[in-house]
Image (cartoon, rainbow over all chains, first blue to last red):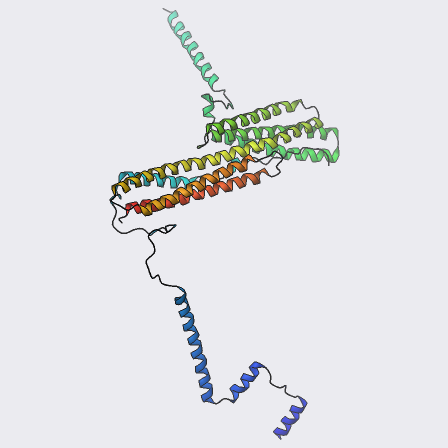
Length: 133
Length: 284
């Protein structure tokens, strides 16, 4: 009776054929055994792990390690961090220290110089005087 | 004997009078832009405060002028015309006074500036003094205008004059700003020269390598050259002013921007020299 009922229902409300991508995989999944399902899940996880490892390797491959030390004379020398090494004989040279002091003074002047003088811009005045509408 | 106190009193009285009259004479210098001793008390700060004060007075007079103008245009009565004339005269006087005090403040600022050559300063003084006397004369001639129409004509003269005055003002401002940059550049030049001499001494002595230091020095010299070029560019921009230029402020801001670039080059040169000094003070 249920079969006949179902058949009647199918005839009245026909089920559209499963032709979508997801629908096909859904159908296959349903037809798989438990062992096959487990194998599929493990395969997918293994693939994801492999892709992750590849991405990590790519970053390392792109940055080439220097095979030789950088040249001593680069075109534009880069600023270095504060040297914590030993001082040279000129670390306490009075001439060098005097120049350093002058440089600090210049730096302060550079920071404090006003290059706008906004208060001395010409005043905004009304130059049009007329009594016609 | 009885007359002696009277004589002493008379002598003291005349002495007091002479001292008081000498003190009053020196205090009546007023707005004097020559290089006399009295004018030195009139400094930039005072000139600028005078300018701000007269600008405030002008704004007040302008508001009253606008009200009187609108009333006259609306009612066209003899009374409203008389009021409009009175307020217009007051506004025009305040306007001339504002320009006058502005130019005076600018002149004082120029006098106190560094890095400006005597030639540039003299040229600008002549221009500013010419403008100052023109506005003073114009202000004094205003009461002679007998009607509203005469006032309108007089006002137009000032409007035409302002086209030239504005150029003088912007040129003065540019010279002041460029003078500051020039003074800083000269300071930098001296330091670079001193460092060059020091490196030559170290090289001659041979107790430290100077190759890297010399490269830093070269970098700083390049920055200095770029800074100078920017200052020249600023001068060219301001020299291209014409009285018919509609937006003179835009050209001035361009020159100002170029000077800021010059300033940035100097800052970079300072960084280079700091590295140089660090290199000199560190062992090889």
